[in-house]
Length: 296
Image (cartoon, rainbow, N blue to C red; front, side, top):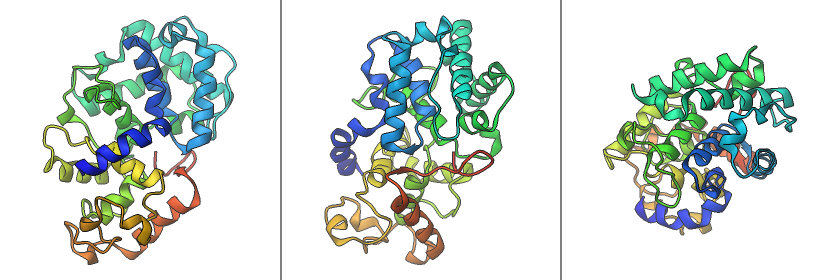
C-alpha cells in the first residue's frame, strides 16, 4: 500500500479535484474551493475538471469572499444532473453558511457523521426547494449512501497537508474519517479482500474503513487517494491484464492479479466483479447514477 501510494501521488494529483483548492494560499479560500470541488467531483474526469475551472474562474481569486458576498447568485453553467439554477442555489447556500459561521469546521465539533448531517441539512435548507439535482448533489448520510464526495471533502480538510490533502481543520482527527467509497474503490477493495459487501453503500464504507484501520488505526483513509486513482487512471481494469498487473504493487494480495487476498477467492462474487469491471470500462471517471438513486 505504501509503495502504491508513493507511486500514484505525484502522477495522479494533476487529475484529482483536490488540485483546485490547492491553488489558493488562504485557508478560507482553500476551504471554499474544496467544498465546491469535492461535491461536483463525479462523472467524467475531464468534464468535471472543465466545469470546475469555469465555476472557480467566475468566483475569482478569493472564492470565500466571493461566495460570502453573494456571487453564487450569478449565472453558472449546468453540470450533469445539476441545472444552472441548481448550481447557483448551491453556491448561494454555501456563501450564506460561510457568512454565518466563518468556517464550516464549526459543524464538526460533535463528530464527523453528525457534522456532515448538520452541514448537508443546512445547505439543503438554504437552497430552498430541493430539486432532484440538489438532492443528488447533497446526499444526507442518514440516507444510507456512502456519501463518497462528503467523506472526500472531510479527508481533504482533516488529514495533514501531505502534498494531496490540506490539513485545514483540527476539530476532527484522521482516525475519525471514513473511506470515501465509489465504484473504483469498491471494486479494488473486493479484489483485495478488504470488504465482502456487494453494494458500495454506507455499510460498505464502514467495513472497508474498519479493514484499513487494522493497517493504520490512526489514519484509515491514508490510502484512499491511491486506491481511487488505481481505478480512475485505468491502471486496474477490474480484470487480469498482465501488462498492468505485473507493474502493480498490490498484485500479491489481489484476486484479479492471481494473488492471495485477505479473503478467500470465493468471497469475490462473480457478478460483483463483472459489475465493477463494467463501470470502469464504460468511462474514464467515476460512474454515478442520476437523481433518485445510486452511488453518490
